Length: 478
Image 1 (cartoon, rainbow, N blue to C red):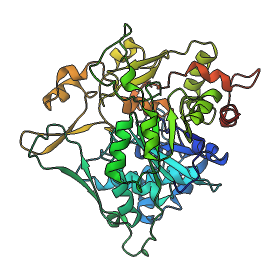
Image 2: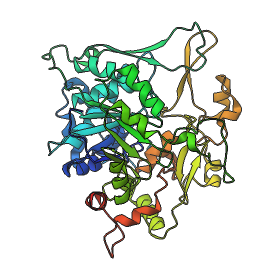
Image 3: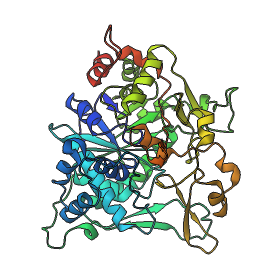
């Protein structure tokens, strides 16, 4: 690893939970701060339509090297003083395999803005986290982050074997390709290749851009077998280390190995086959970090005893003052934790990805079955929609959280829609940017945390009911 391995990697959580303020605060204290790369194009649009409080997006765009794109974005979406409260946020389109050029331009700029702001005012590296399951924005997202000088790219929720080659080509501003997983593409079907050429977005009269630094590539894996697959396919020089994530971590979890068994509470049961073989990982010879219930001083010490470089911590940072979670939701969750009443449910149906998803119980959110049943299904963001092969060979897009009739009309099975929740709208609602629905109604949140939800009380200084990044690092590093 070219960078000094940090003891603490701050998890890249949600859409905008791990925003630039949180990542910058962690970086300034010498650890690896990470921004979430999910949905950044939509988050940037909403910040601009809310009037860009503090002028942060504008300040970052003023440094964006693709000047005509920066001007067009600001002129299109910035609303001085912010939009009317009931006015909907713009949803200008969705990513496609063929490449939706205006949406890709938004994606490049948004990833640049988030990383640039996280890097502002210090010299420490900043990381960005992507989900392999969300493949369509990968190339423009990665390019935008690299334009801003991102130091580490962390990828989970899948097997991201194609990232190293993309990083290498984009560092030279060269065209890159990404083979996209398409449902219904059986034997003999042609690969769906997403193509991206950075030169398509550069101003024709601008000077050529200098080569970009190659960030560290750190995959998140849930087994030693997956670590070995990535190491073999990507090559020893392409991977800087691994984050080994267990089933107690927040967000998406890997499914249990073997036949799915459910507890009496309808949660997936994990067993000995799901325990990562650390001896096998150590043999690979790369740094690794442990994640999932390691957010305590003893958790860090136990990881170090296992020869880990350190730990990745999410839940503790998700509920700290610098987090991007809406302040009202954060306060309500923190009060539950301090009262010892934090409840987490591992929901096998919630996520349209099909991965188990940790849900924090909170009144008035989609964690409440009755609130979930009242929500009218809509698919207007499409972060998690999946390409599928139509009978005529063309590619369509569907999501089991979209309206049921729309999903089944595209060949999806009705039973796949049961219990599915719109994470796209919920995750943006989590950070205080819900889409207005008219009549005073808005999209509702669905907050994810890890099993150590109630354990965050350990970070509050004596006599206080809140904590910040400094408190988390003080406790973890002792």
